[in-house]
Structures are given as structure tokens and as C-alpha cells.
Length: 286
Image 1 (tube, rainbow, N blue to C red):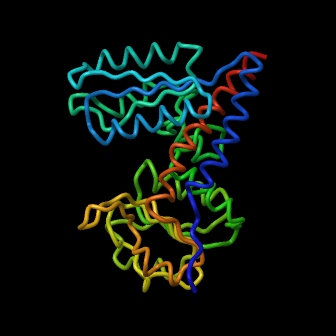
Image 2: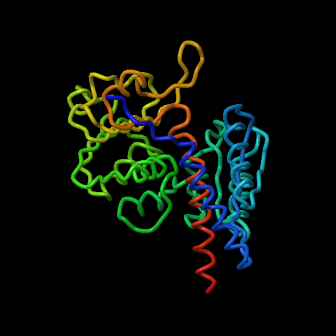
């Protein structure tokens, strides 16, 4: 059996087309969804991410503002900028690109963003909303994973899902989203003694630890669905995930490739969240 690939690029195009259509409809009502992206310092990877995010916004017809600052920017100045964006009615989403320079407390900056504009879903209020099933913003990467499962018509109710990784950005919110869809969820991490014992029981596996080949074919139950969130480089410098793609695709029923899997979905869900924020702002006016 060879697993079917869940094509993140194709699904992204579909969702972005929908965002563009919805954005056009909002524009007709006099509202342009706006995203502000703040970049402090000159981390090369961050510059690429930021460029991609801004381009995706423009392609979908959203208003996007990129604010670039020197690495020497003070925490107080950054907090003041965030506060100004909180109060800007043309901005519906605020994203401060991480990592920030060492002298700035990232958590403090994230908490300074208004929860109503927290389109990254990192604010403690967003985490609380996800935990309790209230409306908020879901972090983009796990949200993208849920859309991928939805795209193959996969019903999570009663299924056993194993999440490898417990970060606040992917692992924990991923587990909560799966739980909301009535899956039975196991979270595994670096202190889990026998990872294979857990993954062999899983109907769905989400690998999100940033470690190559953390999941190999002998660890996967035949027919399982495998989502690979990892972004690593192999010896040749090629992009690869956390999953041994060649091996696992011989056992799984569905698998996401790296690149071209979860990656494109992350930015797409950022657009979806920004659009949603604009819609909420509009309905609050009426």
C-alpha cells in the first residue's frame, strides 16, 4: 500500500481563493481586512517568512503593513508600536515575528497584542478560548492540520490520535483541536519512554518535534494518517520533516509531504484568521 499525499499547496490555493472572494465581499461593504507584520532584527529565516506572509496577503487582496525595526529596538518601543496597532481600526491582525532579540521578552510582547487581533493564536486568552471551546483564534499550524484532515473527509470521532511534541505553538493546541472533534488523544514528548508503543496504536499521528526520522515505518499502524509538521534539513541540505517519508508512505493511508504539506497551510490559516477578525470587527459595528 502506498499512502496518498495530502497536498498542502493545492489545498492552500483553494482556501486562499475563498479568502480572496470573502475579502472582495467585505471590500464591497467598505472594509478591507488588514494585517500588520512586525519584524525586529535581521534573522534571515524570519525575513523569508515575513516576505511570504506579506505576499500572501497582497495576493488575496488583504491590506498588509510590514514594519521593520533594528535589532537594537527597545522592548518599550516595541510595546508602544503594538499598542498603536491595537488602536488602529484598519488593522485586524497583528503578528510579531519570532524569535525576537534576546533583550525583548517575547511573552510580554505577545500578551500586549489585543486578543481580538491575535491572528497567530499565541495570546494566553486565545489559548484559554481553545481550551474551553470558546471563540478565539486557533494557532495557524495545527489549524492547518485540521483543515488537511477535513479535506480528506476524515472523521476523528472515536479515533486515537497521537501528537508527538508539546510546544505551545503546535503540540498542545493540536491535541486540544483533536479533542474537540472527539478523538482520544495521547501527547508524547522527549520524556515518553516507549514512543513506538503509543504510535502503533494511533489512527492519526501528528509529528511536531523538529527532529528527523522521529517516526519510522515500524512505528506506524497500517492505514494510519500521518501529518508531518517538522521542518529540518538532511545531510544534503534538503528540506525534510520529522517523518521518514519513504518508509512511512508504504504503511500509512495518507501522509503529508515536506515541503508542500503543512507548511503552505500555516500562512493560509493566518489569512483565514485575519479575515475572520475583520468579519468580527464589522459585525461589532452593526
